[in-house]
Image 1 (cartoon, rainbow, N blue to C red):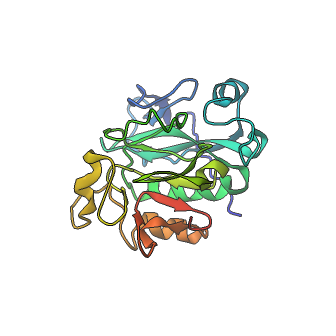
Image 2: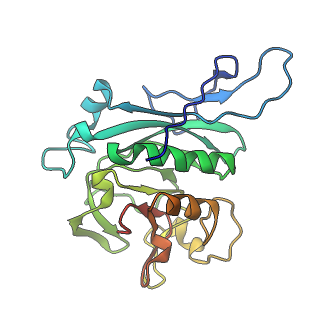
Image 3: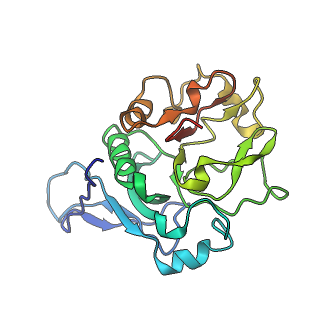
Length: 237
């Protein structure tokens, strides 16, 4: 298990107006400067903590419920730095399984150091199969959600690895789930063409794929039939 990296220097961190996706009570920071100081390299922030009581109350009956395959006590809230499409550092939340929290922090440190752009990072919403809006420009990087496996043709009867906190989706708009050339969200359909040039796209051998591979996670872009380009999980499912 890799060590947790927490770099929060009081003289280097100043409040940032939250990105559009920021959620209370979570905080966001930009790396600031002391008055008259020379520019400094932004520092990565990676914080792991137990699910706070206000968030636990928010999750119950929404993204977590009785019967989910993992108890709330085995989940952790991460606060992670990432580079936005505005080329500025932001922080955002992920909820993951406690068993992989250290490794996930390490992965996002690698993405931060490489300045891989993430559109936004936020907590998931309750899965409502009959009320899902499939044609959406929403583009959140997210992890835990107690829901079944979703395909472009609808949900299955099996738990997703997201329901265990053991999967992460990154920039889903630019990295869609494709089955036989079909993508459900019409706004993501142009990205079936993987020759497009967009820094938010995940590609074979890039820093995202390499970093997750280093912790033993597998990429949905390696699947033999369908391709889930946004999806990384501990067991490849």
